[in-house]
Structures are given as C-alpha cells and as structure tokens.
Image (cartoon, rainbow, N blue to C red):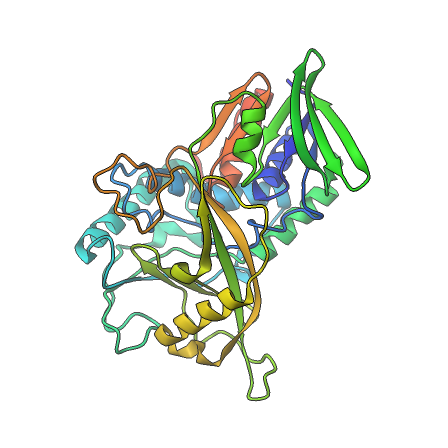
Length: 414
C-alpha cells in the first residue's frame, strides 16, 4: 500500500480522491494546474445530481444504474468527509422535464424510461439507502405527465412535461465545503499553478515533471491518481495506458440575476422553476438560493467540439447574452434577468459524436455513461467518472482499491 499518493487535478474528482485517501490514513499531494482548487468545470455546471432521467437514449439501462449508485452515495460520502451538510441551503427544487417538439425520443418513450428510473431507485434503496441530498427518495412516487403547461415555460408553447424528484446543488457552495475540508486535513497538501508535463517510471516509483511559475519541479511517489479533467487522456498516454476515444465540448455556464429598472440586481428567483428541456441538444434553467439562476442553451452555449481540447477557455460575453436572449423567449420570467457571470468549461464524453447527432444506426457510446470507474497500471490509477454526480463514488472505490481497504458502506446499507 502506498504511503503517499500524487493526485493530478484539483477538481471535484481530485479533491474527493484526496479526502477518501485521508480517511484511510494515506497522505497525498494534489497537483493542480490552475491557481486555485475547484475553479473550473467543478463549479461551472448546473450541479445536477443525476438520477438517470436525462439518459433516455441509452438502450442498455446501464447509465441509469450508475447514476443512481452515484446519486445515492453522493450525500453520505461527502458528509463522511466534510461533516454534516445542510443540503437544504444549497439544493434546488425538483426539476420538471419538458419535452421539446423535435425531441430525439417520444413522450411515450420518455415516460417509459422515467418509470424504469424509479424502479432502479427502489431496487437499490435497500442497500444504498435513500438519502438524496437531504431528500428521502423512499417517499418518491411514480413519475407522471404534468397537467397544463410546463412550469415557467411560455403558455403558448405546446410541450408535454414530467415532474421528477431530481435536484441540483449549487456547485459553488459545495466546492467551498470541499476546499475547507482539504485545507483542514493534515494529510493533504495542495500544489497549485503546477502543470504536469511529463511522466516517468523508475525503481523509485512514478515521477511527475511539472511546470510552475518558479520553474520546473518533480514529484515522485509509489502511486498516482489521475483525476485531471480535459487533460486526463493525454496524461494516461504518457503513463503508457491505452488512449480513450473522447469528445471535448466547451459549454458556457451563464448565471443571471433579476435587475431593477435602474439596472441594479434585486429580488429572488422564486418565480423561476428548475427546468430541463429534453431530449436532445437543449438546455436547463436552475434557480439557486440567493436569487441567481443558472441557464444553458446548448445550440448557442456549446462553442467548441473536437477530439482534443483547445488551450483557451476564455469567457465570451456574446455567448452569454445570446443564451439569455433565447431562453427569455421560452421562459417569460427571465425577461427581467441580466447576465451576472459567465464562463466556459469542458464536457468530456466517450465518443466523437455530438449530442444532437443521429447515432441510431451506429455503435456510438455517446449516451452510455455506464463505464465509469478506474483503470490502473503499475501504480497509475485513472479515474473516469465523466460526471459530477459519480465523482465521489469513483474516488471512494479507487481509494479502496489503492489502499486495500474496502469502500465504506453508505448509511442505510443492509
């Protein structure tokens, strides 16, 4: 068992990996290219704790099972590492799913899928528990079609919709708790502004060569957990692992806040309901406590797609304004909202297809996110969850495998 581990990447995957190691008495050094931890993709997303509703296009059903596993472990694991968490202070209301006219799945097909999600939750509840970010999923009934117009959408738009138990947590608030837990742990050291440029194996272990503002540095340890986000595949190749076939999509997070007639922010987001538009390249509307609302509209907000990430992740005000303008046409209450913040982050997925592509006649795994887990080779551990929801569970499983200590059972386990 390694006495010290190098963790590449200071996002939610790397931070929870370090916390899972610390809980087992193993020290680690987080090597992060950015100047701070938890500063990019981990906070630039809608924070949805997926139960699998959005993965209706995976015919195998494997993605739903993985998302339910991740979602029902999410709160228990984070509370184990961070202490008691007031989920109600950072949690959204449950999402409505509105079916778009050109949806890639019919309303009937979606209804059938949503029923399977509920069945999956119930089948796992006996051994995973039912704590879903402070909500008891044992009390969840069937997912049925809503009556009238979807909550918040223009009443002139004809959409079927479903009320679901799925929620988001404000990733900024959650990441602040994770950063505090790292700071308070005597077994975790963070080296920021430290970009890994090389990997070398020797009898001494695995050595990482890094660029820093003060020049080159090296770090050596018996084991490395590769938790990088868009850079993970390239680092795996340096370590001798078979490269993954991935797609990188740069999607812009846009945060809006209600403005007064004078232009100053005011009021709350109580007139906005959490909404996901399905099934295809659409978007989300997520009100967070404090008055801010996360919005995304994929046809405008996805500014890059490719088999390798671009170096630049600069905010684009034009993308933010276009996203808001489009959603204002669909959600009347957004008319009084203004852009408060915006920033891009990469979505990493295991296929070169885009979300709106017709892949019905191909073997594309785009909609299959069931292959999350850990790939290892001689002390190098590559953590591959691809999702905010499943990151803590993958970290727990990897720490268990690396240390030889079993993964901690969640509360409520039989």
